Length: 60
Image 1 (cartoon, one colour):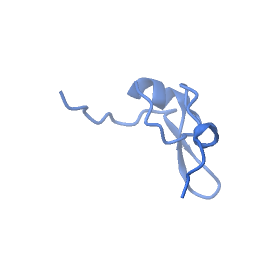
Image 2 (cartoon, rainbow, N blue to C red; image 1 turned 180 degrees about the vertical axis):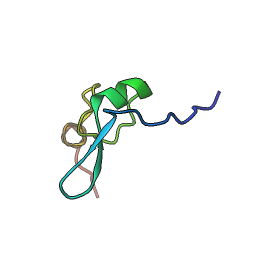
Image 3 (cartoon, rainbow, N blue to C red; image 1 turned 135 degrees about the horizontal axis):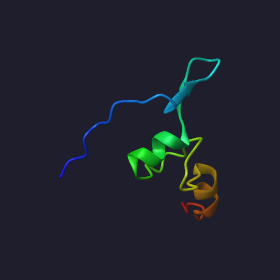
Image 4 (cartoon, rainbow, N blue to C red; image 1 turned 60 degrees about the vertical axis):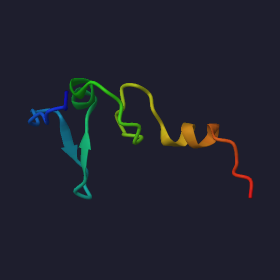
């Protein structure tokens, strides 16, 4: 079963002063899964920084 796109609702995002769209926790919870992109308001606690620190250094 393919996921269907959901229309944005009031409170799903805000615009930063630089003009970037930032999704809120409300949006992420309604979507229902973590995309593992390190979103600013991730309700599942995923963090690119924490994930990168947990990786062992590359040998080469």
